[in-house]
Image (tube, rainbow, N blue to C red; front, side):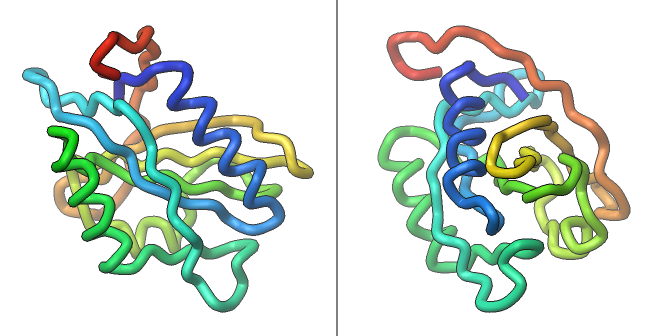
Length: 147
């Protein structure tokens, strides 16, 4: 994934704000000519999970529709998701893998240790959805158009 420092900072801040629960949201941007997700901005969403919110999050279909509409209005797409792992490593859990449904999307995880954001990682889902593969995070300065 390619993004700006401000996008990374927004993800980190959301993770810290949501602590001790998981925070979650959408990655908005575009897929470039090399098939790389270029993240222009994030869209926070409420964690809809009703139980065990310290270890689980839920994004509803209505949340997805609203994010997709917002993105489309700005000439962007939903190209991934992010969430935080309170007091847990920034690595996909078995639940993360079981609930991931979109190969080609970027999945960002930020660990939050005692309320402070720590490691941030990105992952892509294998085409057969059997595993996550590490994805490089490349930082570039945002342009006037935000991309």
